[in-house]
Image (cartoon, rainbow, N blue to C red; front, side):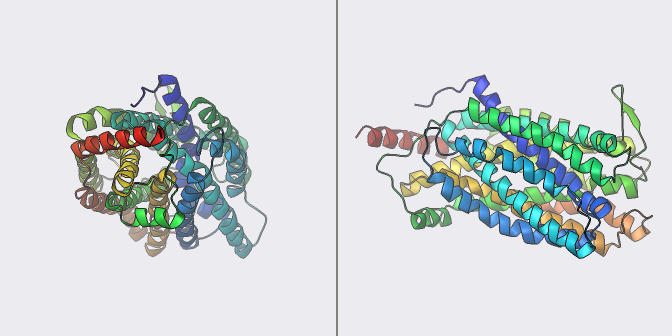
Length: 464
């Protein structure tokens, strides 16, 4: 039978995503800007690099899943990676935001190497961390709750990162957002915090689900099971499209306020008694809305189902993203209001995705008689990397197509392109995600039947 997980352990599990999400959000919101306006390479070169490095890295994720499935330690299969990889993760994060004194060609090579290594290290810690959800509990509702804790902490980590990144960069960089020294020292701060959070996650969680003792599957069998796991493929498509939606919006936001809205990073606004740039306010507001969406996801999904909740959230995100196109530089209030609504919808999707990945692992075990949690969960990281790769590549190429040039006044065509990239183009990605999830076959009734069969199988096998 499934055991109830304590609030303390749920919080400990959430610490892991708070750590990785700080870097994920800084990457998605600021890395393209860092490469063009600080590091000194073109938007097209940066976009191509995102595609090349992350497509390769996305296919590295299943390798990590296969390896973690075959690890056996006194701490379990997945938890040890949180301890082993925490420091390499922090070190590579700092090197990614370091600007060497190289010529443009040398800088591009450095960017390819450090960014590739950073994403591989991200896989080595994030794929096992995601897989941990699948072995902490076998109860579907408990998994959704765990995923919600995870995403609340993820968005809190992201919110803290977005709230502090610009002030830290300016504090270390003499008041400038384009100071190379400011960026590297600011990332050191986040690297230390992330290391401590990963260690806290390792220390406070437990692995409970063990495969049946008779189960000794080969890599060929695991890959074959994955190939015929239809729900896995559907979630992969929905996840890629959802990340594409978020990546295009996130990557262009800072350009939108700097070059379309005309707000420099020195311009400050007062909010809740604090002074911050409009860009920071927009981003922080989005993270706060994400948290609201995560909190709402569990009760709504428990009432109408995960699939229907996912579908409705992406439908609303598409509609309100399209509305954003019709507001201009004088409509700051409406832009911020729409950002809150869109981000709330997007935030509710992610705990559902993580919980549904755990369900596809159960489906595979039920269908094939074998369980490969790490390999199945690597799909989640793969979808993130592929969505991020295509989104980053598309963002860079679109900026180049619209004639963007860093640190100069933009043409009318470039400004219109930036406007489309925050509204209509992400809406199209949200619609694609809806199409995938509309054919997802695992209903709540189906999952309940699968769980009952698996409980009986495990009990019988493990008593032999």
